[in-house]
Image (spheres, one colour):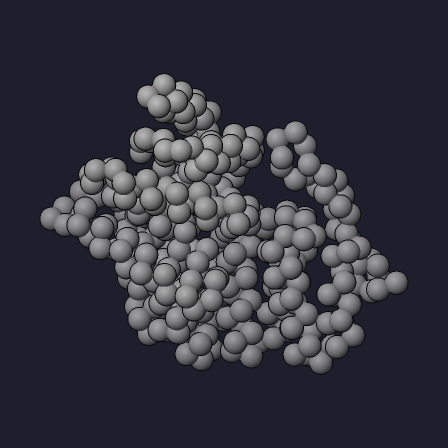
Length: 343
């Protein structure tokens, strides 16, 4: 058993060196993703081997670290089915290991990734996500208690800020709008003090705008929605996943206040981008396709609403290279009748 465990941990160490550490501060940086894609099959094999071993292998925090990063990568890639088991295993490892600051930090990072996925899994998932978000806030508070704000490191600011904003998301998902709005405003206030966190500031504002829309603050919703899109797209480009996420939030907010025309424009742009970035069958593409169809329906364009549901099947297929990444072979011509009309 000792030999088995030692060999397993050596394999984990090799994988940790090969797989980049997920960049929490600059999470919009996609340069790591091709390396993650190459490492992912090996991490999946390690994860399967761990659970199939009897008795369980005595692992260390480094294995939880690798699973955390794989879970984050899978989440961004839209593969929550892959991510959830890895993240839950990472949580289990943190609960088995002796308690320490390093273990608590790891547990917070794992729960932060997992609760994002659970928010989309019905009332039970949202309730569990809120419990995780509250636990993260509690652990972060314990860690930073007594440390003056001007002595916080960059990672401390990001950890507290994203924990606050994530809690806001979890509250809003359970229709606790006022409480969620307060947490978003707390995150916005924090990030606004630091020039280095402008992207995070505007991302928090893109979440805050959803609460403004629900409360029918129409002028503020329009102003903030357009400002967040303009800034994040200008910083990251139109096809960056954070830009697309921001566009989605703004599109939903504008639809909520009755600005269906502008919402339709945003969802159309987003649908085209997701087709290029993620392909025909990704949940992101299908979700934006549905939103666009709803916009057309609300505008009374029932023919367009029906046709857009079949638009993706006219798009070129994607092929995979040896690293497992998807490569777009052809672009989209949204002026082509074939794009919007069924044959």
